[in-house]
Image (tube, rainbow, N blue to C red; front, side, top):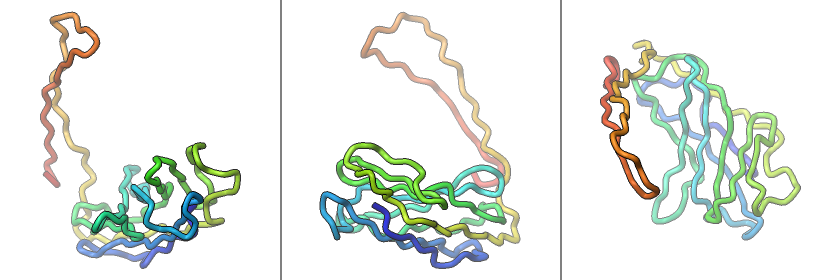
Length: 168
């Protein structure tokens, strides 16, 4: 259950700054515990309809209650809008919360009570005088042309290369 999530600064953030969200959560299996989570992240839509995640780090085997992302010089300036915050416990039960509350959750281990705060205001803005990278990488892939019949358990591979003129 996500109890709260707070954005440290809505910005504008610049390259080198850190977007930071602090959250509090508990698991019905261990009420009051915040150390039972395996994964946590917040997904945002970018100004060019891509997405970026703020992620929690694991220190000494414990998931941090802070989601962070260092603003890169390649990030496009503008508004970054919350899609959802997702938290997964060690039993692989997850909950996703958006700005209106419940976005979705796995049915295993979650009771009928809404596991999300009523509202989440986590959108932030980036100011980047350099303009950021608005060009998608170029993917050069060789198509897989089967020359044999594959049986269950067989493997194959695809060769590819990718390049990005702006951000490498």
